[in-house]
Length: 181
Image (cartoon, rainbow, N blue to C red):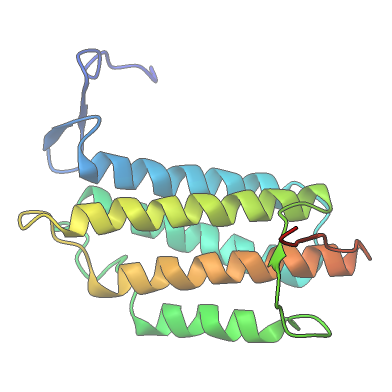
């Protein structure tokens, strides 16, 4: 089987069900951002991560794949891959599993530390881009977006921040903070 079809050579791409859209359409931008995030989570998982963090990321990767499918074909996958309140609650439970440090955060954490933590910080930033792309998509009347999808992406970005800090803590890597001079 060939991987190339040549059907996208003029700037369009095909979606399940035969729909063709421009590659810069809001729906394709949202799908691409979710795919990019999923790839970054795969990169993070290639690093030395504590087992619980890797397990969470593996589950989230599967959830993101389903979300990408839902975004690509909302009618075909309605309900099948739609994140509901239970997935948002699971992300909150995941966040609560990891201590937030010895003291309340009063300063911004500079992204970095271990390579794994740096990749998780980058994944958090890309997750926020996903969120912006889905917000843009949801603002169009003819582009349905599941209601809980934005809550899921918002909570996922929070989780990735917590996991980056946890990865640094597990490696005994001190965090750096940004202070106004």
